[in-house]
Amino acid sequence: MKPLFLLVLLLAAPATGAADGDLPAAVVVGDRVRAREAGGGRITARVVDILPGALLVRTTPQATPRRLDLSRLDRLEVSQGRHGHATVGAVAGFVPGFLYGALLGALFACYEQDSGCSTLGGAAVGGVIVGAATGAFGALVGWAVQTERWHEVPLRRAPRVRVQPSLSPVRGGLGAALTLRF
Image 1: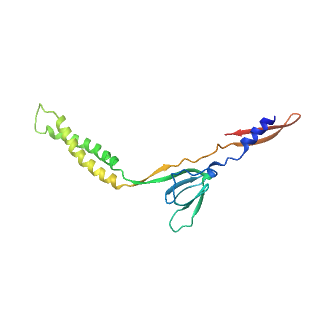
Image 2 (image 1 turned 135 degrees about the horizontal axis):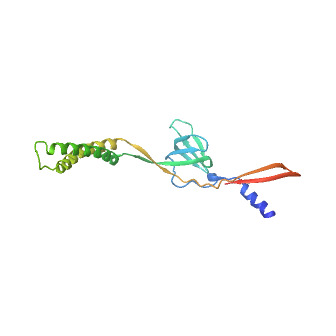
Image 3 (image 1 turned 120 degrees about the vertical axis):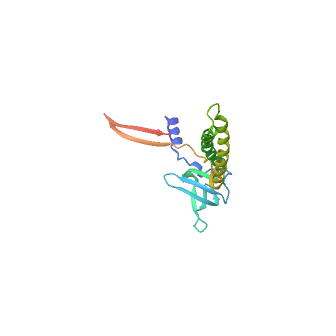
């Protein structure tokens, strides 16, 4: 009975999470971070100071610093900078341009010939020419579209254990139950 009682006490200890642990070296003062608090909203801010178990952040340069307790965060991400999408734009521009150019090339390859004409060569040439032009345009558009890349910072957490005692009347007395949830 005594070992069972000690086990229940050990499991019932409050989970402290990242508040007692150190923050990984991925976050330094001046970084842009994006955090999601447990049961709350998402905040994007710049790190002003790193405290034991917390971050001091500002959403704007004029805003007062706000404390983010690491133990209350569900997710923490650090900005890796902004980047363009030239490759995605080039592919998105090339594919429909190639298809349209191939269709036009196939139609005009045998325009004035009655028979013995292959449309494959015209389709390939038309597809490459039009696809290259629309792919270059798509690359320029993709390069102009800048987005921020985020890297998730692992938060050290203790397992969350909930203990729920309950009492219920039973025939001839009182019944007790203890529910453990992980």
